[in-house]
Length: 250
Image 1 (spheres, rainbow, N blue to C red):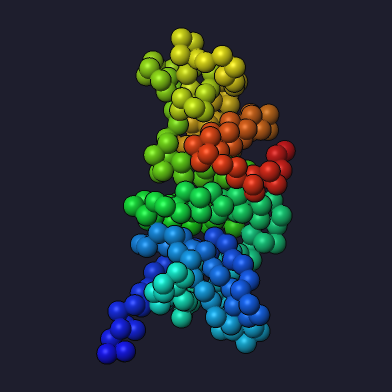
Image 2 (cartoon, rainbow, N blue to C red):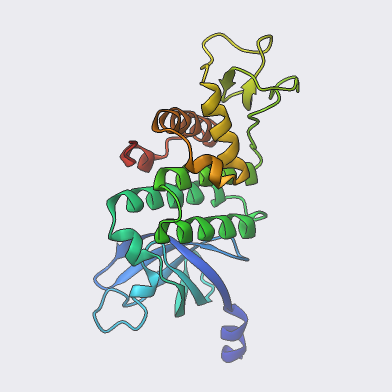
């Protein structure tokens, strides 16, 4: 009976490590975003000992195939097989590290109660970490593209062409986070930012994955786009993403 009970409580899933913190003298609590089970909180026993067999596989930004034992409040990691080792390349570069921290913090906020879109969030985050680790694009562009797509998965897709309020075809010259993106002259609330046309084009490229267009953007428009993205994401999250403050913009 006990073996059957143990087997019934055991499950496997691929997961990316979002965050860790120490527990006792040798353990860690691991915050995970899994492919099929959403966000998980688990204990890794003895993982901080030098003799641990899977300590390095449970560092932030790593992707692993995990076996877990279901617990009352925290699951227990019983096996970990590396799927992708992004942590080392990211941790070796400060710009990449703070970008990855901002992405995983956002992922944690977006998936703490929403399990229905966990697979899409998982795939998006793993793809972003892979691109970041290999230097596919400028780190800040990868971050802003990830943020726009992540909030879109969560149900807050921004508009950068037609008016987010009335649907009037664009392009438009104003942006309002509360209304959902670009706004026309008639719908524009007082005080709404008026980004450069190139900035709005960059935002559209980052959302759609038009990387040739995004890579060709000027630093001035990247900085302006970053401010709009940060404001948009934090408006809809209704909280600050603290790691965004550490990201350096050229």
